[in-house]
Image (tube, rainbow, N blue to C red; front, side):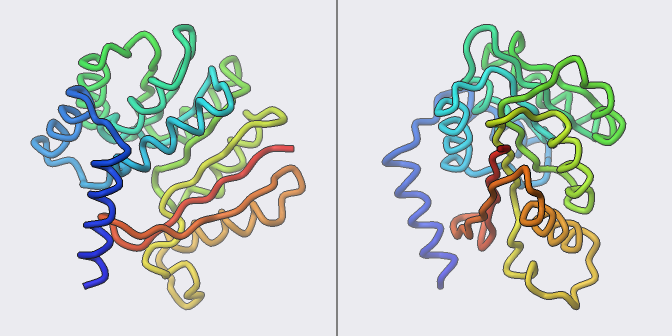
Length: 219
């Protein structure tokens, strides 16, 4: 019953506040038709990322985890003409679909997709740093390592956003031996301990169930 009500509220908020044009809707449709995992950010979450980028006047964005490029489109649209999103995707097929979605949206000049394990791509990005906004939404077991790279590629004022940090409350279960849950727990703990970061996390409910995201600013 709760999930049904959460979904209805999400639908209302999206219908009221989030305008999705043909390119965004086509990206979601293409991802579904290609049987990509249904783990895109929701439309209201995508717009939240867009607002974050615009609020801080971001010009350079790093996204770890592209999937079909839905969140990438939201981020790229927040940037000026000379802005750039570098997005990292492990699966070549996902990257291919994302490239088509991004091209359909007319954003190929603002987006570079790097294919392969993120931990192999990240050491190659020194010349592109620092980034203004870093969005971490890939395999959760490696989130602690992604955080370390995010800090290396940050400047004072860089914002680091992590997705899916609650996982139906499993984050609190220390007996849960799932490597992704353990990675998320360490990811959050390191943010709390890191003197360079001012961080918080918010629980969310909606069409995608009970989850949350973390937000940190480098000081």
